[in-house]
Image 1 (cartoon, rainbow, N blue to C red):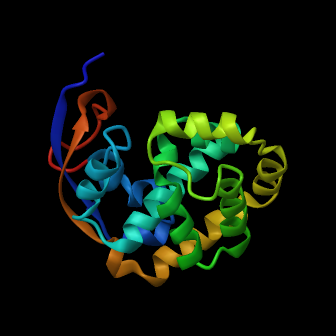
Image 2 (cartoon, rainbow, N blue to C red):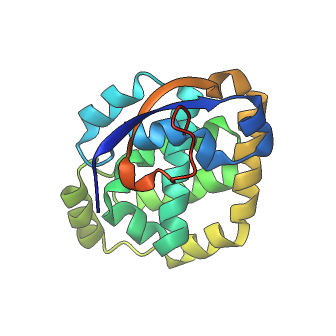
Length: 182
């Protein structure tokens, strides 16, 4: 598999925002911000994006991990580095139920989980953290979260416009994609 990066022009405008494809809207962050290189590097890469973009990006990471394997997976994987930003984002978009779920999950790890993955593993062990009840609560209402995200994006559309270059691993570029725009 070829991991070479290819620079592509990428645009997020009204059409993408009105379509409600959250993942497409945050694609510039998805490929530009690493959750694997540490807290400092992550926040430095986020500086070029708006606060609303950052919130939606972090919430999307949170959702993708919880939907795939629960809060245990979210905190055990590198994605757990975004927990605080996701919590702030849930508060900002007015999703109190999900804010409370993530807040309670963080409390079960001592209240302020580490941004370091290995330290979070130790916190899970030390606190004997269990998340099954929170996972069930999350799963029972996750469509409400997607609606809230779409509403937030549409209400703050100017903050989500993007027109620029991003580097994408060649393996993720479809042959049918136009060479000038991903």
